[in-house]
Image 1 (tube, helix red, strand yellow):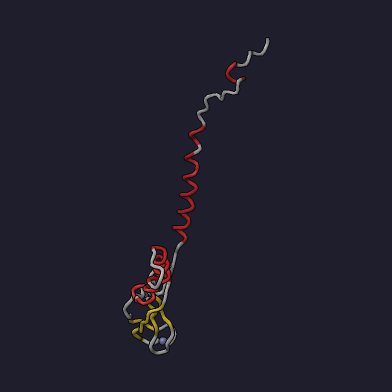
Image 2 (cartoon, protein in one colour; image 1 turned 90 degrees about the vertical axis):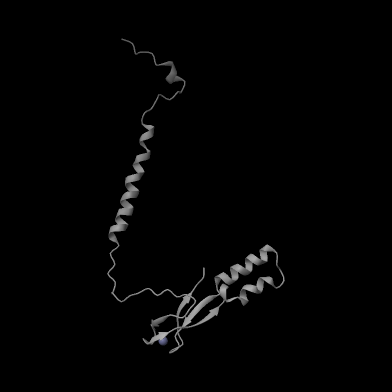
Length: 130
Ligand SMILES: [Zn+2]
């Protein structure tokens, strides 16, 4: 009994038809699903009922000051913020080199709004336009 001669196709390095290739892809899906599932289930937050996230905008808002605990209406003023510098930068790139890029510093619409407690003069919030 002699060994059967090898197939000429295999000797040349031709890969045999392999049906196992398409089985790689579905292996990733359950892992990602498990990770997201863990994150979703572990987030259990017990917050006090009175915690309200105050969104500071341009206009003064009525809040309870976190420093002096007084019920106040914030006083606002404008301060140079991120958007001011971005606008300045954009104008400079567009081509208005002299003076025009300083326009955002004169426009309240490009500045951040700082909310201050009139009672204790502490900064209680800030409206960042970016
Ligand atoms: Zn205060």
